[in-house]
Each structure stands twice: as C-alpha cells, then as structure tokens.
Length: 187
Image (cartoon, rainbow, N blue to C red; front, top):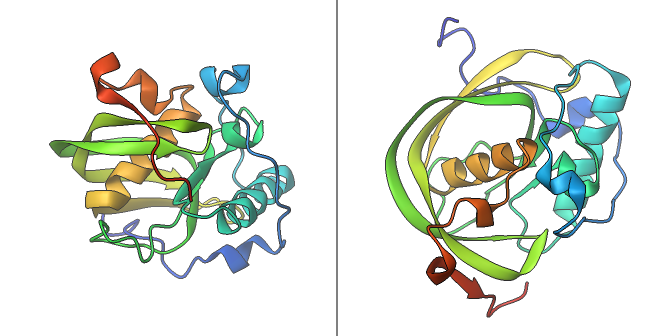
C-alpha cells in the first residue's frame, strides 16, 4: 500500500454516514461479547454504516468517552469510533472517526499509562501501549482504506478500541493485580 495515497481520513466525516445514529446501551464486563473477537465487516454494507452511526451517537452522549467499539454495544464486529478532541493528553487529533477492520501496521515508543473503560466502569489500570502508531482500516460507507499515523493519547485510544474488536479488555493487558485500581472519578 502506498502510504501517501492512503494517508489520513481525507475529507471523511461522521456526516458521511448519512444516518443520525441511535444511542445504544453500553455492555459491561463480564458480558461474553466483550471476550470474543469480532468478525470482519463489509464497510459499505448498510448495517455497518448504521452501526458506525450508533457508535458515534453513543460516544457523543457519554461523558469522558474518547472511543467506543462495536462489542461494547453488544455487536461482535470490528468497528469502532474514536474522538480525543480536547483531551489534555492528546497531541495528534484526527477528530471524530470510525474505522472498520483496523489493524496496527507499526507500533513504537512504548509507555505505561492509566486507562479506564465504559465496559469496566469501576476499575482503571496501568497498560503499556505504543506512543507512536500507524493503523490501517476502512471507512464506513465509502469502504476506502486509510492509514492513520498518530501518537500520544490518540494512539492509546486506538489500541484500546482495536483490542475491544479482538475480544480483549484493558484488564487483559495490565502487568498484574498490582496495576489495577478502584476508579476514583466517575465522569
């Protein structure tokens, strides 16, 4: 793949989903859908576009939410939304976007950081993630394959959501019980 040809989101926005999306309930662990890998999707299929719109709508009404994956709303599929706009730990920000069938192409600059999750509302944990990341995935609706290069907090959010699509929670990535904490602040 030519990295220049597929770099960034282009002019894609959530408005391209041509559906307002419905707010869906968020599933909590130990729900089975959270521990099973999601299936690949056809990014141009009507049900995928609706799912993408639902993820964006649900993420937008959830205080403090910077990402949401299909398994978190009960759908075993490789689709997730991310938006780290305005987060104090964000450096690179691509705005609100949804990716289908995303894969990590490159990962470097590993660093431990604290994570929480809407599907594990009472806990946080220290997780080692790449601080620089290259991800490829397809945009819902158009099906165009894009390559995002990101860092810092957006890189962490992408890895967290890709893990959800693979049936993993941040708790599966902590070094041990000593790296899990009771949540102190609820947004």
